[in-house]
Each structure stands twice: as C-alpha cells, then as structure tokens.
Length: 220
Figure 1 (tube, one colour):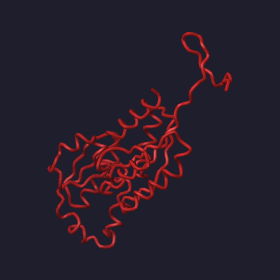
Figure 2 (cartoon, one colour):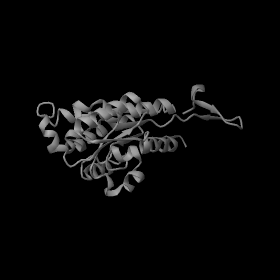
Figure 3 (cartoon, helix red, strand yellow):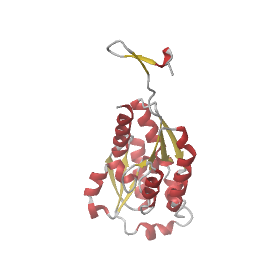
Figure 4 (spheres, rainbow, N blue to C red):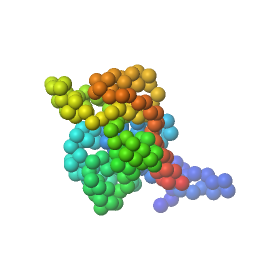
C-alpha cells in the first residue's frame, strides 16, 4: 500500500520511506509499582508504553497472582505488539515464571521487588546477613496500615507485634525517592515495630534498567 504523506519520513539521502510507528508495549504491573513506573515513563518520554496495573493487594494472596496475570495478558495481548510483566516471582514459587514462558511474554527478573529495587546483584550479595531485616519501599511506607498493620491484626491486637516481629532486628527502608517526610514516616514505622531503622536509597534499580533496555530494543 502506498504510504500517505503523514506516514513518510525523509532519510538523509532524501528518499521518502514508509514511516514505522514505535512498537506499542503494555506494561502489566503490580499496583504497588504504579507510581514508580509512571514516573519513569514520564521522565524518559516513553510514550510508546502503556501501563495496566493489577490490584496491589494480590501480594497478600500470592497464589492468585498467576491466574490474574494470565487473564490480563490474554485480555490485552491482541492490542499490543508486546506485553512485559512487571512482577518478580513475588512468592509464587516459580509458577509465575513458568506461566509467562508458556504465554510467550517476558517478566521482570528477581525474587521480589525489594531485590530488583536495590538491584538483584546487589541484593544477592547480602546473603544471609539480612535474614532478620524487614523491608519497606516508598509504596509500603505510604500504605503501611493497609498492607502491614491491618492484615496482621496489629490494629486490633498490638500484642501480636512481638509474635510477628520478634525475630526481626531492623527495618530497612529502600527509598525510591529522596523524600524527608517519607523517611520520617518509615522511621516511625520502625519504632512501632520495635526495630532498628536503616535508610537505604535505591532509586528504581533494575526496574529502571529493564524498562530502558526494553525501550532501546523496541526503538533500536
């Protein structure tokens, strides 16, 4: 079909060629990543990427993540050139990776978001040194009551704190942004749990790198 003028680009040699639209990429993400993914898209001008999020509370029931991701991939894949799943293993015991392979879609690497935010290689180097660490991200600092306090019943039975957290020694706040108010809130959460506090600025880690690589591949 002959390209219309709007579909043409002019090469350095002065020849009109049919323009190629950027491949449309759907990012299928955990709702806990929505703020961070949107920030990366806006900062980098990745206009060829669309974001669809599944409920963040699926993390409270990891056995439901696989079927929810499968349903979302099947519902959206015909509208996009590619679907990229922004979940790590997230407690599925390898089942999510197996399902993504069967569906023919790629997913973000790593055991969980604490690992890929810090960078999977850097996180792995901690080994067993942080087996008694409890992690919070920006999202979890903001949603501490909804994702920690209420599901564990600590709002109704504060005496359960020592049962749940008695073997932890510190709360590690992996900060995606430099926000003093969030840092103080995270510190307050550590006090509430009776844990030492450690601040660790991670930025977006492997999440940013994976999306940048995906963008380069799509536009290269």
